[in-house]
Image 1 (cartoon, helix red, strand yellow):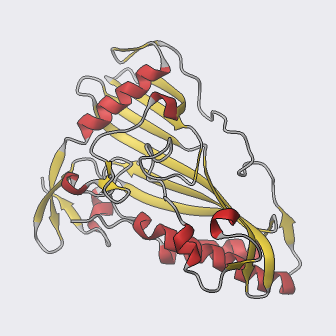
Image 2 (tube, rainbow, N blue to C red):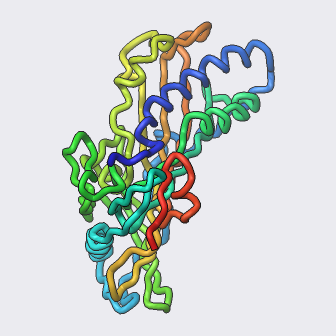
Image 3 (cartoon, rainbow, N blue to C red):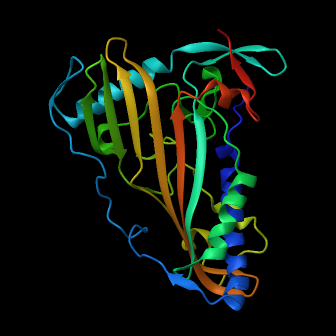
Length: 309
């Protein structure tokens, strides 16, 4: 059974948000003068820097980590083991299926909607309603994941097998480990920046549920055009600053808690929508997957699963 994930329709959602952003601004600029200049920091031109503490060699939870590469290798070992674990779930229709033991939640925020580098309170107030109406969180295995069922867990048109981790030491900008003194450790990993990330093909796509190429979706929006160049010329989709945090039982190598927070900055330029001509726009995305999902989260629509005790 294919997973019901909000991210599966996200590229279409993203294109709609961009068009609404531009079209709404055409109205707002004419009616309301209160437009604030944006903070230029944190955009696609910002440097890729570590946002977590640096690695310190040592023994944590009985495991020795001499280098950052050791951290990455142990993460991969624990990821692979955790994805071998399954549990029984009952659907709303009464059927019983075997899915990943570790299923998670999906949440998404769109922030800092800007047109011509400026923001407006009215547009910002529209965003939560747009997001809530178009994005409904689903559930999936540990990121990156294309299915709640291990037998169908692939991404990128089947090219990426998500039952094992493809992360490499070279993909990681920073990592650290903390001993929780209870038989577990907390590990934090920050992958390196990637532009227009594709699942399985770059540092972000081997760690997060990255979006892939949004160009074809944007091209399908008939009310959106460009005063010069093509979609690929005028879109910058920049992944950086996101992190993953994991609690690991070092006796079993099982990941017992996980939080993948993916951050994306998108810039569009030379856009034409309605009365707006040759305009720029940008937005920030925070996409978060947390594990394990609660029983209530799994039971509610659109998921409708109950763990079999």
